[in-house]
Amino acid sequence: MLEEVRISGLGVIDDALLELSPGFTALTGETGAGKTMVVTGLGLLFGGRADPARVRRTTDRATVEGRLKVEKDSKVAGQVEEAGGDVDEDGSLVLTRTVSAEGRSRAFAGGRSVPVSLLTYLADDLVAVHGQTDQQQLLKPGRQRDALDKYAGSGLSTVLADYQRAYTRHRAAREELQTLTDDAQARQAEAEALKLGLDELEKLSPVAGEAGELRVEEERLANADALQGAAALAHGALQGDPAAVDEGADALTLLGQARQALDGVRQHDAELSGVADRMSEAAYLVSDVAAELATYLQSIDADPARLAAVQERRASLVRLVRAYGPGGISSRVNGYPAEEPDNSNTLEEQEPDEIEAVLDWGRRAALRSAELEGDDDKIASLAEEESALAAEVAELAGKLSELRQAAADRFADDVTAELTALAMPHARVTALITELPEPGPHGKDDVELRLAANPGAPALPLNKGASGGELSRVMLAIEVVFAGADPVPTFVFDEVDAGVGGKAAVEIGRRLAKLARLAQVIVVTHLPQVAAFADNHLMIAKASDGSITSSGVMRLNRDGRVRELSRMLAGMEDSEYGQAHAAELLALASDDAAKA
Image 1: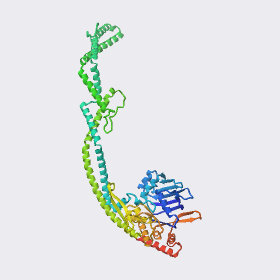
Image 2: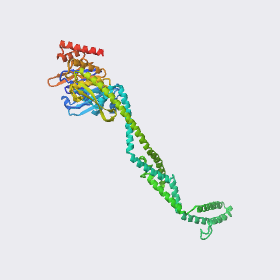
Image 3: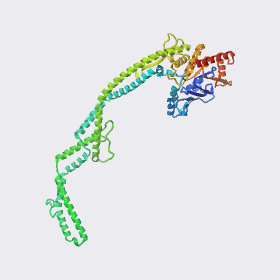
Image 4: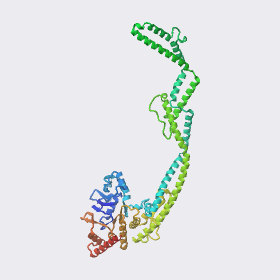
């Protein structure tokens, strides 16, 4: 709700403060005093087009600042805080719009500079401005359908909630089904590639650490003759194999002779005794080595067939690593390759780690393969679910259409009755419901309000079927009918009473007062019958020094209202007859308010 608006440097308004209050506020004043500038200022405050020609020629910029009251947890407060602005603890929010004489425009919300478009977004939830040149909230796409839905009541809102749940589930199922279906060829290729790899792994059955063991075995088999010859020669040299030495005694014999020689005299010298002990140890050690060499000679087997098998096995492992190990072209499962080792050693040193990576790929590939195999079942299940949800969406969309059509018929009767009382007895407003190409988030219906201003006239969209004054009255009738459904906090009407008078003007005042019981209503009017129903009366007064005209705003007390209504009635604020008639209008309005 608007609490106050300060306008400066706009048209004839030099500096004016509008102190607003809940209920119905009437803005009156002589022709040219600047009533329209007040509506223009409110339009600027809520994101309207900035016209530098409206900037007062005695200043370099026009400024409109408004203080509003909003709920701290409201959508408006959230939008302002998201933009960096602040809402006071008591819910006060300050909006500011400036327009320079050069055409530059700036906007502020909650003390923070914001895009002008933010003010437009905020306006959707704060104010509806109805005038000849102002964009109408009810003329926006989707707003008319929303308004009709709220008018229809809780029965439609319950069905709409069920529909939107079904629609959301159906869209998700359809998108998932479409994705699976579109990717069928890619998934089949992926499944075949995974199966090929898993078959290779199953056929080869690699074991972690196997590559290192095979490398050692291959090295031994490839050099079996050399190893056997060296071991035999060494064994003969140590243990007296005649074929191992050309002449002389073997090492063990010579060590035995040396030990015996030292044992015979060791008791004579402690130092020599220590040498004799070490000689004995050497003899024992050489004897052990000779025995190990004998065992080793028995284990050496020059087996060409086994060597070939080992080499073939190693080659197969290398091919497997290249295909499914780190960096392998076939190693990706769901976009994730097997993890690469962190070291940068040679290929042979990496082999054990790489086999482990291949085994890891196999584990993940098996899971992915099982997942892909289940996609066919999933597609069938999704297709069944999608079909069922489509049927549910269609059924609920049909119910929505029926409820909307019923609400549209009631709405047309109610608005037409209001228009009759607003001096448009031959006008009829209808809510045309047409079917969309396919259901959307709100059903299968498009709703457009249309007006036939006269008998036999075609029903046209609101902004094409009425003049400016008629459109304001149509909007008033619609807002009164929609009141209580979900009104915005503030309504502004300009020229709502154009072209009417007498009893019709009184009915307009009554309906504005009725709307003001649910929302703040600000009306620019030239009819005393309308202004008399206001809870708060502001008069825009102009003054001139002969060269420059300026206007200001004052709040009227009861005596001031009587004088202003008298001026509006008779053109003379001091006329006794006019004042008596004005007092009578105020009494009528007061009685109406007491009965409400």
